[in-house]
Amino acid sequence: MASKIGGYDNSTATGAIGGGRAVQRPQDAASGGAQSSGGSTGSSSESVQITGVARQLSSLEQAIRDLPAVNDAKVAQLSNAIEQGSYSVNSQHIADRLIQTERELSRVPDGSDTDSDADAE
View (tube, rainbow, N blue to C red):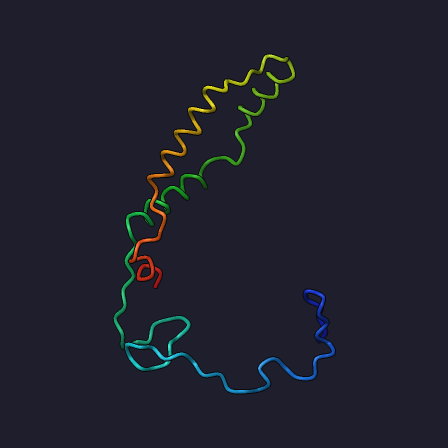
């Protein structure tokens, strides 16, 4: 099967990827066995804990999914104001909102704490 990716045509390649060699799976440090890429091993009792931040993100994602993609009424109102020449930009309001957004973002954890690796597992 020929395919061309990134300017390289692999139809001229002489061997298959991996060359038919065996692949060694990484060892699990806790059990000494091969790590499984999915599913449960049956004998281990692993648990997953969701942090408060993850729960909050999940609820925010759901709230965003429930909103319409476009606020048609607002678009119509703004379009009408622009067409009539009555639309004006309140630069003070925009600046205040930008500062408010920056303050809110500065309170969001950046994920660089030492427990982030443990949460990812």
